[in-house]
Image (tube, one colour):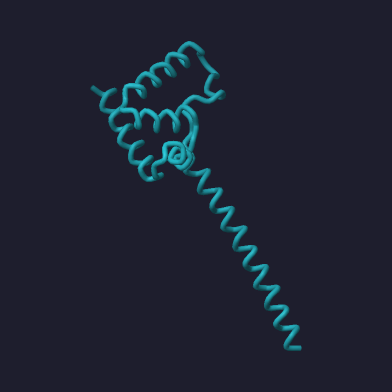
Length: 116
């Protein structure tokens, strides 16, 4: 009887741990998808006028290329190539937090350039 209770307890614990791991993975994937930056120019965005689409893309690339090197790399990889912040961090050998700071700093700089 004692062995049977212990066996049930271990089976219960094993299933509980497995369900916990599955839940954690689902949450992790959802969080990763939620925080994934979307590229500015995707194939679906070419529904309208191709000329204005091309002009907008060229203008965005010119604005981004006018930034400092690391800021240029960060924004182009996130918004033009569609990488996540963590993927950019790995490619540039910097932390994800640094990528986030550069992204915010460069977006503010672009905003100032456009408004002036």
